[in-house]
Image (cartoon, rainbow, N blue to C red; front, side):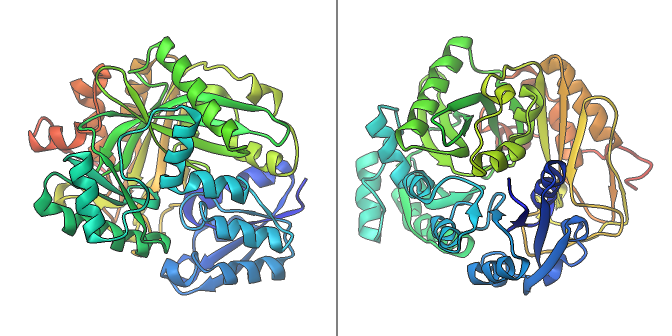
Amino acid sequence: MFEKILIANRGEIALRIIRACKELGIRTLAVYSEADVDSLHVQLADEAICIGAPPSSESYLKIERIMSAAEIGDVDGIHPGYGFLAENAHFAEVCESCKIKFIGPQASAMHAMGDKNSARACARKAGVAVTPGSDGIVETEADALKSAKKIGFPVMIKAVAGGGGRGMRASHNEASLLPMYHAAKTEAEKAFGNGDVYMEKLILNPHHIEFQIIADSHGKTVHLGERDCSIQRRNQKVIEECPSPLLTPGMRKKMGRAAVKLAESVGYENAGTMEFLVDDDGNYYFIEMNTRIQVEHTITEEVYGCDLVKEQIRIAAGERLSPHVADATPRSHAIQCRINAEDPEKNFQPSPGKIAFYYAPGGRGVRIDSHAYTGYVVPPYYDSMIAKLIVVAATRANAIDRMRRALDEYYITGIKTTVPFHSAIMRNAEFRSGTYDTGFVERVMISDQFELKPTSTRLHE
């Protein structure tokens, strides 16, 4: 087992990894930018080293600075979390060359599956259906026009190194294609240091279903069910639940087998997620694999009774899958709301600044993963998520009711948050029925089917 692990990330996921390490008896080294000096992950790690200025391009994306910190800290493992360098195969190779274990998949699997275009090719080879798309990377404007005409509008332009909704743009006609093409490339280059994009057919208002994969280095690969991530805004997930209210037992079995088959075909190890789009006729299409831990891994943990971050660390240390993970079965229903520092009443405008008062909900079946606290200053340089609110209950209806109650207890002042937005969704009849798709948020908000209200008139004033 590892003696000391460097966490190459920030915010709630860095704190999540630190907690897992502490339970495993592993010392931790946090790295941080100048903007994160007061962040909880810096305070709770055993050691911490500043690696640069606030912009991620000058800190969390600087491989050489992270590796210098690893050398100074004398670590034997690096956990990348999600985002930043988590799906950067070169980073994994640098770790390997420095004799430091990268806690994630091997670089070869990241090359095969972390690149969205390559992953589609692997899926085709494994016999897993994919959405119609371009033949490789779309390198020029002429290639973009040619591919779009071949596929047929509408199309989705996607970053090969993308994640979190970044580097994605939809085009519904030829007039919008080139502006969207350049916008996707520019955003991808800024977010991932890789501006390559590919193109695929846009399936209007599908269901977004993903399967959690976990595999050890001893030939054991399993899936831990699915998560429904269809509640999205601008291609970014807002609410996730496990299991999906859409899937039948037969669909779950068929899609789960396809996910495991694809992972095994590339010799995948550690945690990863196979993402699919499902249309109204029950047809499913593989779209990409996230070769890392997911933001929404929490709900799988609650439903299947496991700790995926600990399992990642154990697998990286050469251990076999824990028996309770290899043979896990679902036992409940879980929902996660991503709490962002944004103002829903002003088109979700970012709301950085100092949190004047912070009180997190509690009680049975409520989990909070957050690095926020009273007095914490939310920096403007990074993703706006400040917390994940997770509830688990015996049934979906009970989970929704529990989430409504928990949201009503969540008090954050000094900044605007998406708490009222989530509360409104929990009251919405379409969401409660489980019939929603990826067009839900835009459809409901445009039609004003619900009104955003503070969850309390006492502490939100």
